[in-house]
Image 1 (cartoon, rainbow, N blue to C red):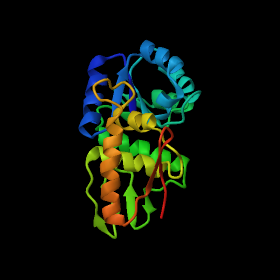
Image 2: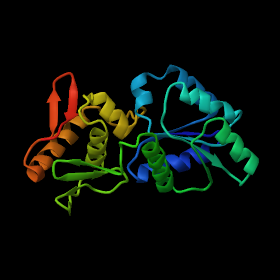
Image 3: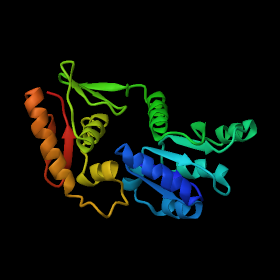
Length: 224
């Protein structure tokens, strides 16, 4: 889930559309709306955020502190024109990266991933679960060196569970990560269907079921 903060609707709409094409949920806010949301959002919603894009808005140098008070997700600032003083000022107040618009969402995703890897060195570009190698850059996983093709949503769920291996994840957390916490068009129960299909495929390729489920408690990825 990516959050775009910009007072221009054409900008937020453009990026949310781009993220949707990549299978990643996102939402755009004007500055006043974002401040209200950030102050009231539950921790489960905040925890689903993979990155923030800070565009053109009033008093935007105050936003890094507002965000960092509740979330450590990558914060990338967007500049319309190259401006050294503005760029240095944004780094000084706590942004993780500054890029010039327009920028493709794939580059944003890659930059956010690089920021996360630097912050948590134990999280590499991939992770092994049994004989399966899971990537975090949009590639399908591999089993014994062979590509294991998964539908977009199932792949995203698997990546999220790998990043949180041996942690119990509720259905709500998984839904928020994959679909976004403001998605009213999809029922939360769809997570059960996705995981059921994913478990069947994993059992077929790995020879064991790496997903442990407990009613009312959620799901946890384990190694064999």
